[in-house]
Image 1 (cartoon, rainbow, N blue to C red):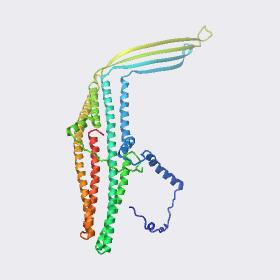
Image 2: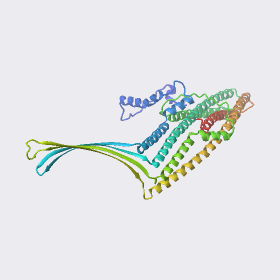
Image 3: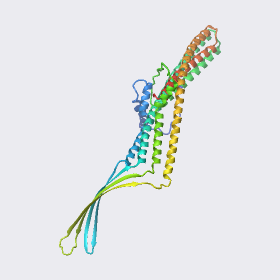
Image 4: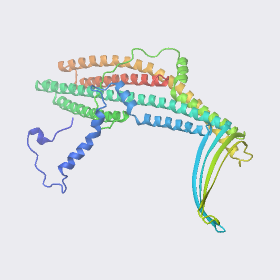
Length: 461
């Protein structure tokens, strides 16, 4: 607990400082700074539910506001845009032209002004280009990989929100245990002072009890500060401003049962359902399509062109012999053409060979990466499966330890009050109960975290 100045405790006013700062901001500036500082947390607080935050509330808020998810969605849009651009080579290209021209001509005394209006349409169509078709397949696999990457990001964000929420709950419960330890230390001090006045114990016991109380208060203060820090980290994980006030529901719902069954079946489920492995397979497929496209670049491509144009000319002659008035001469003509062509690249300066080598290397790299990811996924499932069973046994042992530590504390207190025990034995029992309760809270949180990691490892998150 933060200590107040001694003047406030006794009701006396502290003496005024002999100097004042040379600059005092205007009240309006102070109000504006306070408004700006509180604007964002207030806006973020509107997104929170009315009651205390549960773990599912945190998961929902993180999925809605996490910038990691926004980045994953942007990667999907980028992949879709690249695939959309690939239609440029598969769909016809249509262009239109229009022009107007004016000039003045003089041919051996025949002078006049000439106007020309032209317009036309050109159509181009690729009839056959196998590398472009294969590259479009690669781009489609890239979109599939980006979508699987979004699901991977969602699972990661959910796990991070659950982990930080449980860390905050653990901090709250550990702070409560430290407060209980302060209460026990205070009771210990009162009993020691009473027995000292009765002449049953020495003054050293009273001094030691005061030291124990001061130590318990310091540890409780550190726990309270840690709670504030973990709440700020939770706000960051949820995509909120760290200054946003959060109220946590510290009720823990432990799993009634642990996962059972064959470990190989869980591994098979993980290999089939995990989104990161789906993304890895999509990336491998894209690399394989890119390699095929690179190897077929020497195949000839077939294309067709169609053109239509029309030109209208108007001539106005001024100095024509034998005519008193100027005369217009017009001429109009149109043309069209259709062509089909075959294009073969005879020599590319080793560009095609380099593309093939790079694409093959990329395919081998993606295959090795997928194999490594599958092995790591199997290892994660095995570790998470074993961790849940270990944490379940640790929780059972921690509960037994707490009950024994509570009984030992009551026994040592009774022995000390009857004069058969010492303050050191009573204090050791108090510290033993504190450690047992801390271990119990950590075991409960560890079991919940192990369950969350197992769900993500098998692809259920």
